Structures are given as structure tokens and as C-alpha cells.
Length: 313
Image 1 (tube, rainbow, N blue to C red):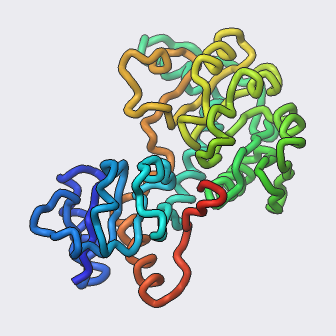
Image 2 (cartoon, rainbow, N blue to C red; image 1 turned 180 degrees about the horizontal axis):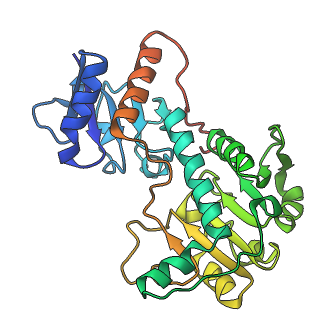
């Protein structure tokens, strides 16, 4: 048997993980990460979200670590995580499709001021509002043009948005204007009506969306942050919204999660809050991705979405 420990979705989710994985390969035996019937030396693989610090280092025969989400900073912040092992970010078509859907929904929600209508409905107020632009008249700027950003760009183009992108190195995508590096960031920001952040979390990107960056966007621009909570300086965003420089925002990720009940973000009239759900695939989809990656690994083929120590993502 191939022993897989799971720490994702809570103990109640383990039967679903077990059923999905064993249906793909009967050799797979999935267990909760604290299952005392599984000895540490028996563990081959883990699928985890926010593993306890030091725990991964106690598994002497662990072969691959799978993050149950696209990010891995919840793993790499553990000083003792086993750096010699492959670390695989959750991915696949389901993740990129879901992120593309979320970014499309977010941009349309900002375009049509969905927050205004949600507040009006909650107050039982009939409040039509004129929409000054169509998608064809708005330019979406995507920070981060990897698999997720590329799929979002394609779907946004299908809706009629003009799309441009910014990344550390230049990317070539059909119909997408490409900006690269720090020198081209100001020009990218100055021509962006809706800024979408899909960057990974690195020392260079943390705190990047601050007052100085937001000030470079055109007056009346909007923001979608579905990258990492650490990218955004919350007080700077609130100041930009309250001053009127920014029109609105959709936030899916936060520096601390769950978002505290007392956070001013919940009730802000210009902010849509979602609970880190932008690209989360079903457990069955994640199980298929993990099973396919294990098959590749055991056959000596390259693993997908490997964490790169040098790049930090």
C-alpha cells in the first residue's frame, strides 16, 4: 500500500479523500495526519494545508509534499520543512479554470458595481445605477502571468476586456500587451483600469500593493487581489478607497485568515470579500491531480508545478 497522510479540510474530509484516491489507484491508502495507526516511517506522501511546524521533518521516508492549494508559503514558513524533497503546488486544468472564472466574475462585478446592488438588496432599496463603461472600454492589468494569469487573460479577452500583463520576465500571450520588470511597472500601472494581482508570495512581492503603487493607477481604478494576502497593505487600500482614488476592490486573500470579524473590510461599501475561495478545486479534482503526479514521480517523469527554491515560488 502507498500511505498518504492528509491535512486538508479537517478530519471529516478524510473519507472523501480516501474514496477519491483509492478509486483512482487501489494501492492508495489515505489517512488523517494524526492517525496513530500509521507509523511515521510508513508515510510515502502528504497532502497538506498549514502543516504543524516540525511535523513534516518527523516523516523519515516521505517522498513528495503536496500543497492542497496553489500557494506553498504555509509550508515553507516552517524552518524545518524538508527542503530536499519535491514540493508540488496544487494545479491542473481545474485550478486554472476556476481562477479564470473568479477573475472574470470579479472584473464584471467591479464593472457593474455589484457591491452597490448587494447593499441595496440588503436594505430592500430599488436603486438602479448607470454603468459608465463596457468591458471593451476597460483595460485589465494582470500582475503574474503564469498558468493562472494566462487562463484569466484568455477568459477576460473573451468578455471583451482589453488585457495587459506584468511579470518579472516578459511573457508572450496572444492579444496581451506584456510589461516586464521594475522599470516597466509604472507604465503598466498608469494604463490599468482594473488591477488583478496573481503574484506568488516572495520577499520582493510582499507589501507590493501599497500607497505608492496604488497612487500610480488612474483615478477611479479598481483592484482584485487573489494572489496572497501579504501582497496588500490594508490601511493603504482603505485610504485609497476612502479618498475616491480607487473605486472598488474584490479581496479573496488576507494577511491573516480567517478574516477577523472586527475587520473594517467586511462592511466597507466599496469592497467585496470572498473567503480565499478563488481557485479551490473539489477534493475529487485535487485527488486526481495528486494521483497523476504520483504516477509521474514513480515512473521517473517530471513533477508538475514544482516549488523553485531560487525563485521562492
